[in-house]
Every structure is written in structure tokens, then in C-alpha cells.
Length: 133
Image 1 (tube, rainbow, N blue to C red):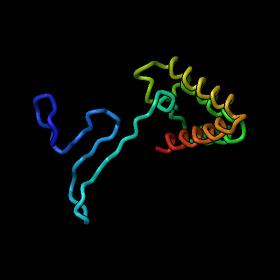
Image 2 (tube, rainbow, N blue to C red; image 1 turned 90 degrees about the vertical axis):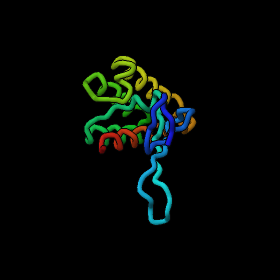
Image 3 (cartoon, one colour; image 1 turned 90 degrees about the horizontal axis):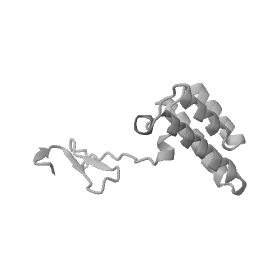
């Protein structure tokens, strides 16, 4: 158990450096171990990826695969049309839009050295994963 501001927080142990990982004690497993849950802490560009309808996410993945950055650029406009993002509540729609445009420009400019092309494909895969959840 961990101490939390004078109270006891049962069943949850968090790291003090706030890296986004936490351990949760649960029922003992068959091997006698402890169940551990890990959460990924996303940076601002990753958190700005919008949650779109599945067919649109697949189209953006297809575009990002063959024309790096184009699907990301189109996804930026879905934010203006009401697509949700993890970052909208913190920074607002306009900032999330410009973060997606910046990600698209990074993908386009670095596509020449293959980094942007690979980043673009992974970005499209993240769009599809977010749409399927």
C-alpha cells in the first residue's frame, strides 16, 4: 500500500516520478505473482491524434502509406469537424489542429530520409487503433 496525502490508498502503488506507469495489486495468479498494469504516457504530438470513424482512419492510413503526411494532414481537419482527441480538453481544438499539421509537416519533410515515411505509417496505424477502440 502507498501513502497518499495522509490517507491510505489501498491496492495501488504509483511511482513518485510520474512516468505514467503504475502497479496494481490484484488476485494472485497461478504462478503466485502480482498483476501489473502499465499505462503509456503520450507526448503532445501523439496525444493530439484524433479519434475518427474507422473507415476514415483506414483511408488516412492508406494515404500515409503511399504519400507520407497526407493522411495526417487530413486528420488535422477532422479535429475541426468534431473528432475527439486526448489533448482537446487541455489545449483546445485550435492547438490540437496545429499540432496535427506540424506532425504532417514533419512527416513530409523527413520522408526523404525514410524517417518521415516510417513515422507516417505508424501514425496511420495509431489512427486505426484509436478508431477501433
